[in-house]
Image (tube, rainbow, N blue to C red; front, side, top):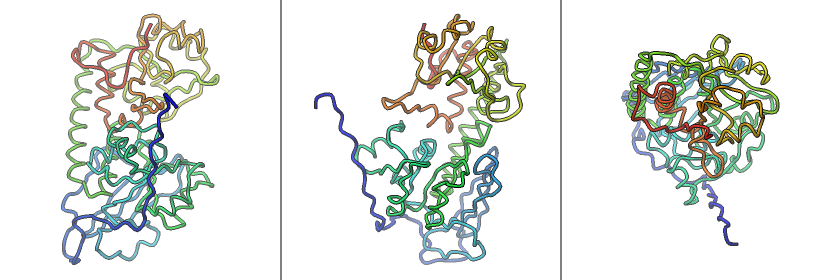
Length: 385
């Protein structure tokens, strides 16, 4: 039919495919340090790593909200023996060659580490923005497994990947725990639990541990941190700190970011006065629109609105009361939806967490345009009149 677009081919994974990894410990020498390049963590607190000559012990200490358990991973260099004494650890041969990454936030890591070739499956195709990953989809080199309660666990077991990367809320009926019981290693990548933008970005090093790309990850992250911290210093030279609030109401509830949250820290680093900075916590608090209006009616800026809004008319159509906020009236509402793909996937949530310096530059350019006069917005755009 005219106007229809063919669906991308779906890969059929061959679990018997042989690894082509270079650098395997063959013949194995117990005296050799197979990991001369090592990562050091400066910001991230959700995982740890201990190096040994031919294996790494990685522990995810905060896998989900309220977790009472941690997850240990024994990353063993290919060709080397599996050490004893780690009965509770999931054993993963590295460098991994066949990874299923079920969250889009994991995909930029493979792009930055030049290991997109290691991806053999994802959760869903539609939300993905990465050009290199989309090219693999178009070539039929990736399988789609969904995620959460909709996870196609049977197909995943048949595919037998080296590792499944996902996140979890720790529910008792979590399908990922069943995968572990069936012998499929599952890494609960919990970068979203980090409130600091640089801590989230540093989870790049977690993925680097899986593909033996520590040196590249250290260099990549050092550049990101240097630029981020330089931008923070620049923002502190601003003559004034505008007031700002975030979000929008959904089904009658406005989930306002708490004062120690990821969003709040970005706003603070951009030298803005977040109006809910005094509320402790790293999550959000439920409010009604009247409560938000009571504090934010005269705010200078409004950011991170509904992804569906492109214009002020869209906001007012959703609720006429939005039109009473000064930030909207003065054309100072900015949305983080400048990079939404045709299927609705928002690259702010895909590549933004690993590029906090770019997100911060956008915010500084919005709040203090005189400090970055030549900056072109990447993730943000003004809500059009």
